[in-house]
Length: 323
Image (cartoon, rainbow, N blue to C red; front, side, top):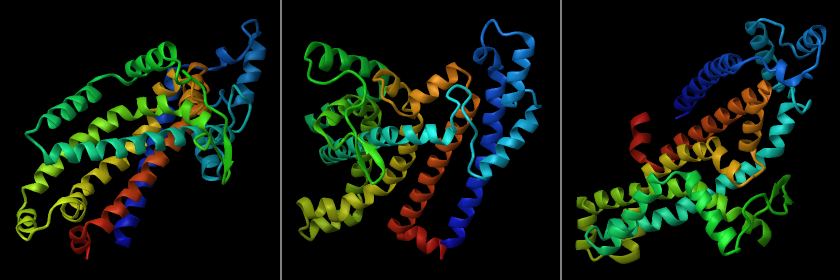
């Protein structure tokens, strides 16, 4: 098991190195930010001085070398626009994004798994058709469109929930969280539900397919023949076997929730990393964009490592194969 985890860590390091090269090259292809950052009436000498000050006059490979060397020492650079360390900027936004992603994931688990189990246990019932039709709707409808519909219905027409922003936050173990207050929950509901819709539909379909497959296995028939039924059959025999692939998928999807929360944060003016990266791309703030991509990739890689470890703990077949 240790060898497998060390191998995964080595692979993750190689992926980080490759993606840093790709991100650095990609952001340099977009254009030179110096003409956005300086005054439109600046002279050529002033532009050259600003370019030297920001290190933009160096060849790309030298800029990458400086970035990589500083990154190894925990410094991801200074924002061109905010003139502040990038890590400090991102650290201010991470709690908001993580809070939104966690709530979306909890909604996906809390709604998707029960509905998937119900649909899987009643494959020919009317409830199955309703649930699966809802899952198709959740997968096919664009999240930005659903977000706008939610704002129109719950904020504009009914006036129940705020249409944007983040509620008051409370410092919990060094993290500013808004979910601890009712006003914060009201601000969180619509963006979390918008972000979770696709994941809810995905979990429903995975759980439904897994439940139908597991329910037809011989050991389930044998358990039923022994008189096991109801909640004991579900939670002791069916659910553990259905959860293994779902845990893997949810782990990967949590990384996607963080990485692709850009649209939802923009629609609801949620002050997370997604809004920061959109503003930084518009201003060609290269250090922030590269740092965001690298940190997001690091989070996804870390989640994948945790999922691999969890998978080993859950599935005895994989442990025996490694041994």
